[in-house]
Image (cartoon, rainbow, N blue to C red):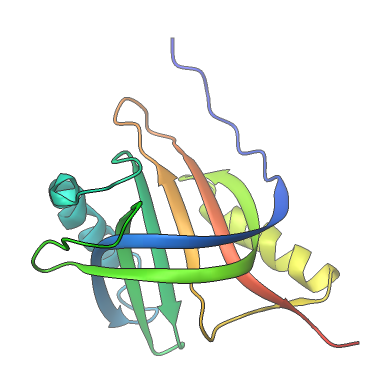
Length: 160
């Protein structure tokens, strides 16, 4: 019997560094999304075990950057060390950054983003773009249709 997964939409502020290895794709925004993101995730998923030092092959990290015209979307695993990068992949470290994080599911991501942006507005934070990326973390389980997801948005406090 499959238990229905419920999104908690619990919000918290976290500080964290991420060492990642993966693949990326860039597309016109918003016309090519989410199709290009799904494409790179599928391509990467088939190759993820080529990466040495992965912390967990079943957790997909998807940082992204967007300027409103183009968006670059990554599909990665977190690693303990950034070395021996497979051909066609990229390794990078997202520096220790303050993020606001929400827990949702792959079927409630839109609502998760809405909760985060509402929280940011109410608490006087803004989205930090320089030196940071927003991240979607997917906890993959091939046995179910609905999986846990965390969304992290880098933030900085607005001046009063």
